Image 1 (cartoon, rainbow, N blue to C red):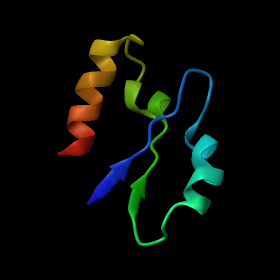
Image 2 (spheres, rainbow, N blue to C red):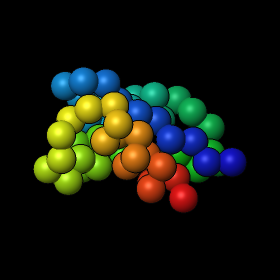
Image 3 (tube, rainbow, N blue to C red):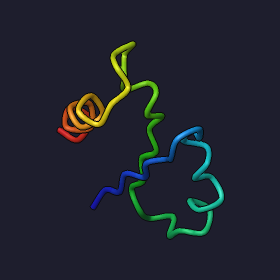
Length: 57
């Protein structure tokens, strides 16, 4: 199973570094930077949802 950890507003994927260190190393964990998903598009839930859908396929 894969796990995707999403950061909050004003953070980056590195916000999860300490958490990942504490989690089982055998887990498949991805921590994308949400700002990379926007591709200069409007920052809104619809844009992020579509980007998440593309990412998870």
